[in-house]
Length: 213
Image 1 (cartoon, one colour):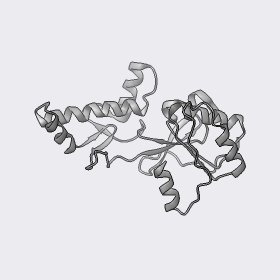
Image 2: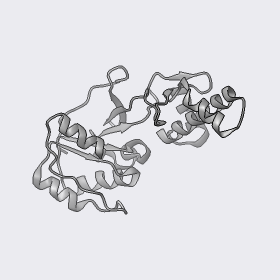
Image 3: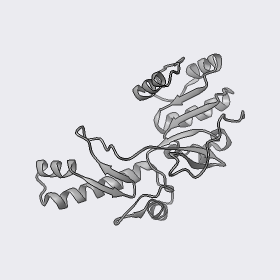
């Protein structure tokens, strides 16, 4: 939320609705009624998997239209697979996508990981699974360099990490954040999550504004 509000101000935009979603994430009708009345150009929703599914379902049911619909957790919620045409043209912030060109010596390419995951578990790899596998890789490398399981030595080794993984580059700043890997933006097009930004990974162009459904 803070990042979105900061970007709104930085780009000279105006926020007309700033609602906190209900804890159960099973009803967004109050917020969507405001959207219908105020007609913003962009609607940004972040409510984990359940929130993404609820949002798409109720946007269709209540016949709410916004030119740009952006949300998180699209892939792990399987909005395209579960909700079909209702999910078309949603823009999705993603930590990882199988089409990205990252690779390492442990898992191979992002596509290799996605295929092996699907073969093993019979569903598409969400970013959380890729993220978890990459975290194990980072810890394993830190243990090797630390030559110890001593917490301080391992912590120092983690802090000095600088490697390339199938999930993306890994390098931590002083606060412990990985500052080298960018988020990607995909859009549901034809039932698929098509990467549309950044340009170096884009497999297609964003369709904006969303065609009315």
